[in-house]
Amino acid sequence: MSGRRSRLRMIADILRVVEDSGEANLSKIMLEANLSYARLSKYLDELVSKGFLIRIEDEREVKFRVTTKGLEFLREFNRIRQLAEAFGIEV
Image (tube, rainbow, N blue to C red):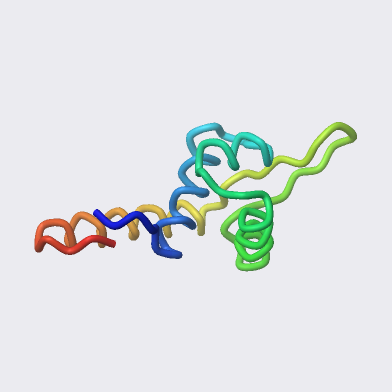
């Protein structure tokens, strides 16, 4: 296994953390997805703009929730990952 994750793997990791939590704040996603603040911010902006995540703001913090589109991406990503692994390919 290489030490670097693909862009798709990072996106899937972010979505998985948020899905597992129901809603997740920046700190939780950074910690569990193992991403720096700068990189995570870039991905979160993209995922919100593409409709994979919803940004929820209250007076205390910002949280994120996975949309149906985000769940569909995760489901398809897992299918592709399993297929690739069956052929010895890392995604």
